[in-house]
Image (cartoon, rainbow, N blue to C red; front, side):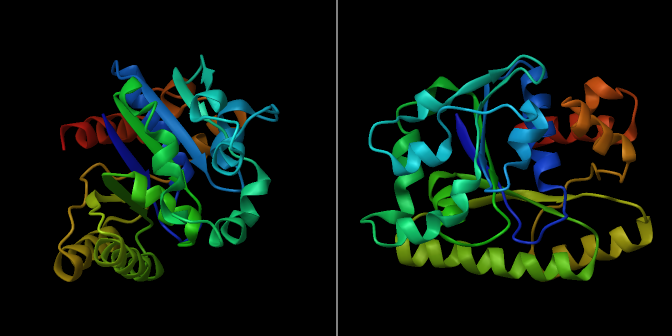
Amino acid sequence: MAIVSIINQKGGVAKTTSSINIAASWAKGGKKVLLIDLDPQGSATKSVFGDREFDVTIYDVLMSGKHSASDAIVHSDVFDIDMIPAEIMLSGIDIQLAAQYGRESFLKRKLKNIANDYDEILIDCSPSLGLLTINALMASKDIIIPICPEYFSLKGIELILETIKGIRTGLGHKVSIRGVVITRYRNRKIANKVIQEVGENYNLRVFEDYIPDSIMVEEAHHRHLPIFKYSPKNPAAVAYMNLAKGLLSK
């Protein structure tokens, strides 16, 4: 079992798209997968379940003493994954956690009793580096960094690496980086330049399966389907399936 966070504090890098499609691809390959939506916007939850409401969410798990992680788990037959949904109340949780003892490890403690029930646990992080994301990193063994091939995505990597370094030195927890995923890919020349900079400046692995920009991906979200079910031959569907295999092999 491994707990992996998908993280980038910059929005618009297909973080949630990558989370739900990697999770569904792992499940298609025979893995038992849990996806945790840790984003107050609840984009992963809405992409999988639409407007469905839930009695227990990750907010209740973190802030209520009467709910365990297993209380919040719901299953998606379409994606063939278990999921812990998010809600808008997460947007104020940093303030609520700030006064709590051991505030950086709430999620890690809550996941302890269910961790061995899954082959893979994937966390879709919020687009910030606040306490919510720190909790995800403290619970995780590895992270995956999705970036668009552009300058500002590269700058985001520096902040992530600084945060990981701070967690290692300040909290004694080591988080490894499985690699960088190029998303919303359009131009090979620009992508190659970004990949070169990632290798030279940060010494990080960049996965060879770039995720092309495709309207089909957005349509799949609206149909609440993984891209490989909505449009199996679409280049983005093929890329996500190949990427998911590469992530497991790593």
